[in-house]
Length: 574
Image (tube, rainbow, N blue to C red; front, side, top):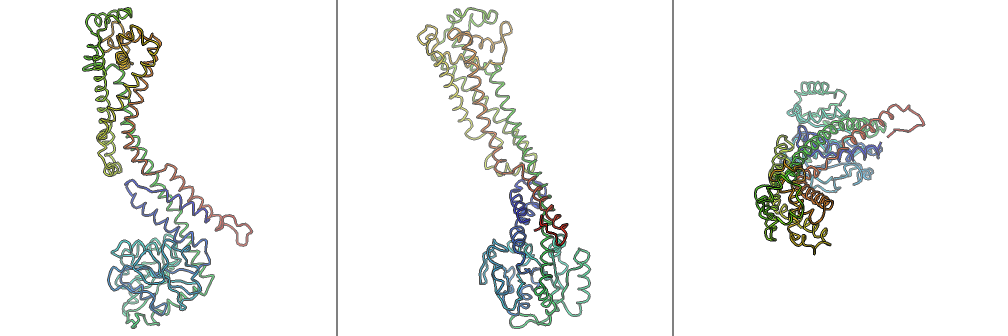
């Protein structure tokens, strides 16, 4: 069982629930509370079942908790708060012989052990007292309704680590909502609870105690002992008259002296805590599943936006769309349109030599084509990057979780990155350099030929780019438009130098490299969204791990409950 509970704790710790979904804040608090209870009470207690019974005294502000603790011990061991809110360390009083049970590695391991009063709520003051019966310890907790959140959180943590909840309320505060919320949780997990109705006027004892008893019964706590302490003066040491608390002291002493009764209280509370942890884990797992689903939807939305951009850029860079405007003008300057281009529109089958002879381009004109290509590609990629960012942001803004992520992103995700244009420029230039190198390498053994020298490396590389930009245009012969004709002309120029097969290979390599360049640029933009989701560290398998861990705990509980008394089999027993 200890192993199963340790695994349950690990599974719960993984369920961070960072997205602001409906009910997520409540389940985050529940998960933290459950992890604390496993670490502070359930696992340590299961490993030390013989440890003294821990009675945690909790209640509302001004209910008289510290005064009751001091009175039960018979001396002042904890200081009542005069000013509210009182911030101080919780105080645990125990018999000196029981000191070994309350070390740092035992109950409430996160609280530092100290031997003096301190205002540090992260410390636990240990007070050994011979007045305490061996086998019983009393812990004075902060106010459960303190205006200081830290006090309230600590009070709840301490009450969750109790074998016995000793709730102190008063005639004026017994119907308050906050204490009943704690009592409701106690009833849900079958925790051992006793109620002390403090500071009650003698003439109101019967009325109030009867009403309080009915309230307890209606909320599943009819078997909880109810003690009444009448309003009266305290001694100079701040102690209640011994007769007023005699019944409570005798009841606690009887528990301490009766090992079987003490063990029964511990087992009742421990079993209830384990059962409730298993049940509540499934609720947290459901919340974790919602987180996984939300992340998946957000990721799909971002991917869909950028997948569209990748597809659109790929199509626009291969269907001849780029072979217009400035690129077309500079290309026509280089090749010299005139009779050649008009003839190509009707007679694609011209001899390569005729094509070569018609080209009028100069090196500087090839460079102008290259510059126009660079500008056209950069503009194309930037436009689609901006459009993808707008689509992704719009889809995320449609959900509360997406809105929070966008707000906390640290940049405007609805626009392309600030440095995207610079990165696009560099990437396009790198691609052009690669195309130039392809041509140079392919023509290594043709550099001295008249055709190679006529065009130069720059001229042949821009011709290859033009061919790439009409990769999917599929236009030839009479169907050729300006873009198709330009591509056909570029292809004939290349074939005149390298031959058909080499040109096809060059065009394919250049095309694939351009696609990879555009993918890389847009994927980097996509990662602004997906990295946000990855940073949440929401593992899809976490909900199933929690459910499996909870089922294992339930299976062990069931096996232990149905193991016959005296059986030699210990399988499943805690």
